[in-house]
Image: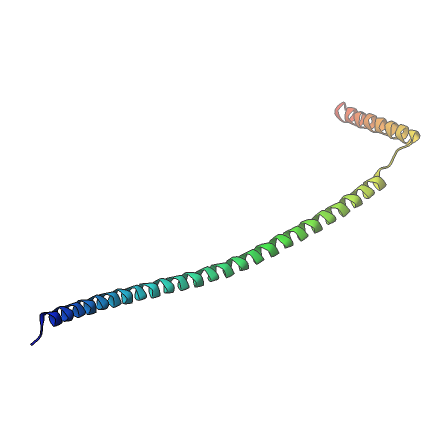
Length: 127
C-alpha cells in the first residue's frame, strides 16, 4: 500500500504536471499569437514596400513632367523674345517719316479729292 507521504508526493507531482501542461498550453497559444503578429507585420512590410515603389514611380513621372514644362516654358520665352526683337526691327524699318513737301502735297491732293467729289454730287443732283 501507499503511505500518505507517497500520496501527497503523487498529488504534488500530479499538480506540477497539470501546471506544466497549462503553462505549455499557454506558451503554445502565445507562440501562435506571435506567429500571427509576425505574419501581419510581414504583410504590412510588403504593402509599405509596394506603396514606396509606387510613390517613387509617381515622383519620377512628376519630376520629368516639371522638368519638361520648365524646358518648354524657357523655349517659349526665348521664341517670344526673338519675335519681339524681330517685330521691333520690322517696325523700325516700316517707320517712314514724311518730309514737309510730301505732307503739303498730300493735303493738297486730299482737298482736290473732296472738291471733286462735292462737284460731282452737285452736278449729279442739280440737273
